[in-house]
Length: 237
Image (tube, rainbow, N blue to C red; front, top):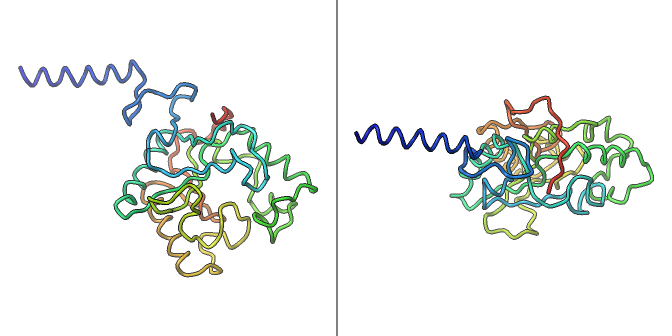
C-alpha cells in the first residue's frame, strides 16, 4: 500500500509540473519568455552579471537595441549547464561573471549598422585599438548573425565570489570584447597567470558541454544546443 501511495504521489507531481509548465529546476516557466528560456539569476542566484550591452560600456558606446533591462537570459539547457560550472567554482571562493547571454537579432543588426558607419569610432581606444573598424567583419569579430541569438551562447569570465559589481574579475590578459589577437584563447602575448585563468575557465566550460571560440577567450556555445537554427528577436526585459 505504501509503495502504491508513493508512486501515486510521484505521478501527481509529474502531472502538475506538466500542467503548470514547471521547468527542470523547479519553478514555473517565466512569463514573457519563449518556452525553454529562463532568466539566469533564477537558476544561479549567486552568479555575477554585468550585462554590458544594456549599458554604454561596450564597443558601440551606447545601450544596444533590444536590451531594455540588464537581465541575462539563456535557454534552460544552457543555464543548467552553466550552473554545473558555478557549482564547481563555489567551494573555491570563485564565481562566474556573465557579460552577455541571449542576444536579440535586432541587437546584432544594431552592431551591423554601427560597423558600417566609419565616423563613429568613439570606443576604439578600449575595444579595437589595433584594428580598423572596416575590418571587424573580415576578422570575425562582428557578423550579421550571432550564435547568441539562438540563446545558448554566453560571454563569461571568472571572479571572486565576494567581488563587488565593479570588480573586473580575474586577470585574463585582455578585457571583454577587446577585438585583437591578444584576446585569442591561446595567445602567447598574455602573462602566464592570465593564460592559466583562461585555461581553467575553458576546461570547466568544456567539461560541462560548452565549446570555445577561437578568437574570444570569453565566448562559449553549448554543444547540442536546443535551437541550433533559430535566431530569436524577443527583447531582453
